[in-house]
Every structure is written in C-alpha cells, then in structure tokens.
Image (cartoon, rainbow, N blue to C red; front, side, top):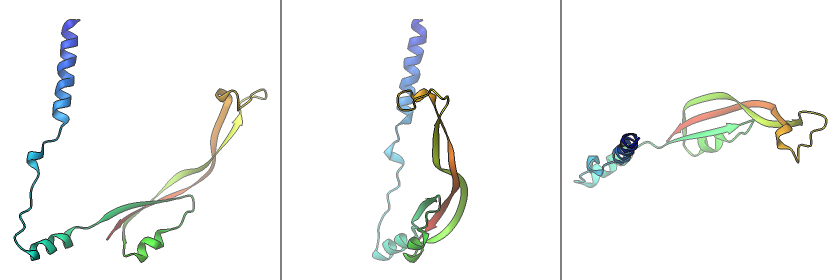
Length: 116
C-alpha cells in the first residue's frame, strides 16, 4: 500500500514538472533597422472567428471594416428549449426531477473565419 502511494506521488510530481513551459526556447528577434520592423509587422495576419446563431446577421460590419472571409462553416444548433411536466401530478417549480426539456426550434449556426 505504501509503495502505491509513493508511486502515485512520484507520478504527480513528474506531471507537474513536465507541464511547466520553459522560457529558454523562446526566440528573440534582433532588430537591426526600421525597415526590418515594418516588414515583420506587415507579414503578421490577424485572424478572428465569428459565430452567428439562429438568424442573427452581422457579418457585413466586419466586411466593411476590411476583414475577408477565409472559411465559412454551417452547423445545426438548438435555438430554443421547451419544458413540460413528465406526469399530470408534476409541479415543475417544486420538483425539478419531473421536468422534461426538449428542443423547441432548431436553426443554423454560421461560423466565419476572418483574416485582415
């Protein structure tokens, strides 16, 4: 029994030690001139994920601000839920165990991956 506890403690210690990231692997940029700085800034692209559910519209605001749609996905999503009692004698306010919840309206969720 004592051996199992020691092995468990050793395992937890190893997990904790290996989960910490080391800062020695970070690369530092050497900035020689102003031209190099401006080239690095221009190469960085900003990315964003935007989701619109159940008939919401608002992607035009992002497109007007200069964002470009790189990918678009659509998936089914439940918009509203409906609850009803499981039996005639069920009081849903007092007894939460007798409440049955089912999807009421099912719509689409559009996912846009934007780049600027």
